[in-house]
Length: 356
Ligand SMILES: Nc1ncnc2c1ncn2[C@@H]1O[C@H](COP(=O)(O)OP(=O)(O)O)[C@@H](O)[C@H]1O
Ligand SMILES: [Mg+2]
Image (tube, rainbow, N blue to C red; front, side, top):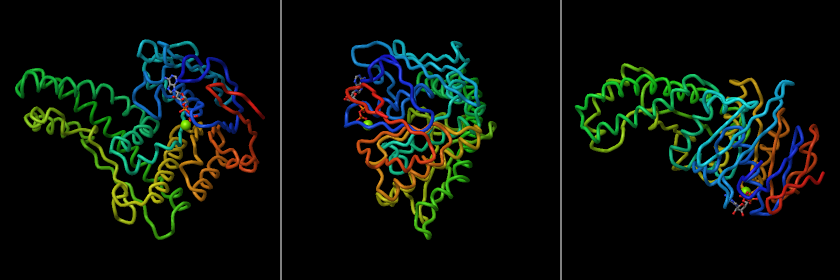
């Protein structure tokens, strides 16, 4: 690990099962989980702004992870060099970032997750994307080509008007890739709906019902997609943004028939959030056939005690490696790790020290 937020450069050898990391606020707990998340996904779970991950006064960062899956080792390395991401698996560059991100599934639970329920629809699209990446990797791979073509179409509309000649080829590309990307979102939504009930029932009062409804912003039918784009040229030109397509998806969450986004109490939001995260875990497990690595950031501060119990259940049931951070180690008693081997760490001023 080199140049990642406030973490000191160095090597860390985590335990194979449960790792509990304790530290006061501002010491580097979240940074450590972020570094692990970055090594697996080339993203942050906190921010879209990747340059913010690079240590102040440095120009690049690198995180390499030695991973063992089904008895076979591999090394994954993710870097940010002059603002650009670079990745390698066993020293070789994969064709796309996506191929890299599918390798090692990771699910993170963190305080910002509450935004899943009450925040903007982009939060829920991101959840759909994390699932789509594993549920329909081929369809999801169309996303980048779709976004490029959509941008070109919008530029052509705004610069050259609704009769620009190059609109036709751009719209064909948008329709072809957009329909595939849309389909991967549909499959992700279906997988989440299928998997959300068990976790929710365990957490919520019996009479309460949670349902998920995916409202696609586009269509998975390429011919219809193309027709919509043609019909909306003028509108999209005037509003200076495309009005059709998966970038406008919404995942509606309703609780007892009412929109959870607008009506759920704080406590209910927490339950729904946790149920969604458990569903994400289940979907990835189902699709990838491997237990995701679990990262639980500051669990104790954001969840009330009864919900924390549900998180403990997940930790206990997980077969894969787990990293938990907390300011209050007393909330993570040895008993929750009874069946697993456990390693304890402290982090202070970006330095990680194993204490047990
Ligand atoms: N790019 C960066 N370079 C150096 N330090 C950073 C960077 N980004 C954040 N920090 C600092 O890292 C410290 C640890 O942050 P964080 O991991 O969120 O702490 P914790 O989760 O333990 O409360 C904070 O003091 C923060 O200001
Ligand atoms: Mg933190």
